[in-house]
Amino acid sequence: MPTGVLVKIYGDIQSGNCYKIRLLCSLLRIEHEWIHIDILAGDTSKPEFLQKNPNGKIPLLELEDGRLLSESNAILNFLAADSELIPTELFQLAKVQQWQFFEQYSHEPFIAVARFIAKYLGMPTERRAEYESLQAGGHKALSVMEKQLEKSPYLAGSLLTTADISLYGYTHVAHEGGFDLRGYPSVSAWIERIRNTPDYIGMA
Image (cartoon, rainbow, N blue to C red; front, side, top):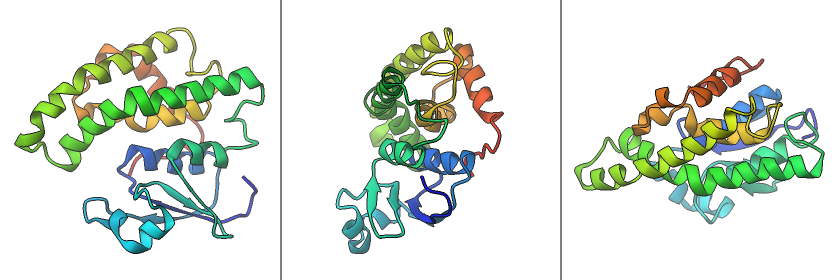
């Protein structure tokens, strides 16, 4: 990401997918304008937002020249290009992407959705069964992470990468979705490792 370029980020800081973009911007000191989008108020369904992202989802990145980029991990990797958070060696880059696909397909659909039901919706009775059904999948994802983090300090090896930022977004607040992280000591140590990274910023 070129220095001195101001970007706009549309998001909700309580969303893990949006927070990981804000965290990356803090770690890399990327100038940006944060534009709050209220999901529950229907902001993502408004015509002016749908013109920018027809999929009606956040986060969304807008560059100075008007180009737009959606999907959180694509935004992460774009903003982190040419930084120490993106490996240049092809296999290591593929490992980062492997964990990002894992995050979107095997982690987020369980942990993020359970958290949304509990935190955003206040656990409505009609969604209690769905919430309970998500627990097994979330614990499976955490177990996969635990096994890797027993071997290496970060998910793709010895260095912090965008793979870690991708998975940190929802993992560090997994307890808000009913997932007790005390059973995952290596994941908990990894969370502390990231919190102690220079220029770290928490979820406001």
